[in-house]
Length: 261
Ligand SMILES: O=C1O[C@H](COP(=O)(O)O)[C@@H](O)[C@H](O)[C@H]1O
Image 1 (spheres, rainbow, N blue to C red):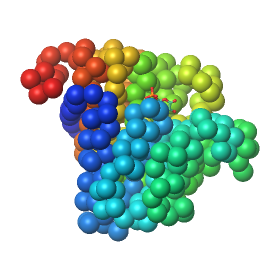
Image 2: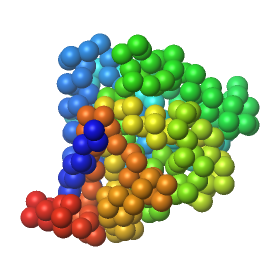
Image 3: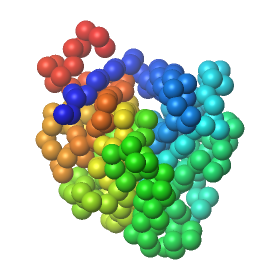
């Protein structure tokens, strides 16, 4: 059964990033107190990077045992190693270079000049194998049951690199795919598929700014994942939409009580 998403609206994007950072730190600490390791899937984009920067700025970041945290990515811009547009490079700059992560637990998606070469399909397959190796018998798919999977939301309702009407949104078998002809640069990307995203315990979608308002309202109104990939992104235990007021402005009132904004 798919649980309805929980919507949380913050005053502005700065407060949203700080509150999401506090929420993520708490979640990781809770998981680490119950199990040996926690796992988080990171997203690229402005809101994902703002959340990481807010963690870096928070004194509470020291409550996390960074050596017992596995980090994965929901998507990557298929560019050479070190390219400033790569999501992993931006995540390192915002947070990962400032905390004692275990490099062997930082599972970056392959670069276009990596061992898999410039073939995005081969690179996607390489990442799928890495995910499958990390999955245990208790997991529900060929990927680990990620504790929290973060997603940014594009103004066209894309999540990860799953764009409306693109073949990658229709994928039901593979966990990672190459994406070609992306409407947002760069044109070639690697992305988790919706089945891989839905293996997560919790999926948190982040959106701020008025340019996201239409996408938020559309995705929450349930037009179907082919037209609005974000509507197909949900977790097994919880789906959380973390928004600022501008991004939440067009949500139909029956889906979100404005009094709590
Ligand atoms: O290119 C990407 O964009 C989306 C959304 O980014 P935003 O800056 O509009 O918030 C992001 O979720 C994705 O990871 C990234 O590759």
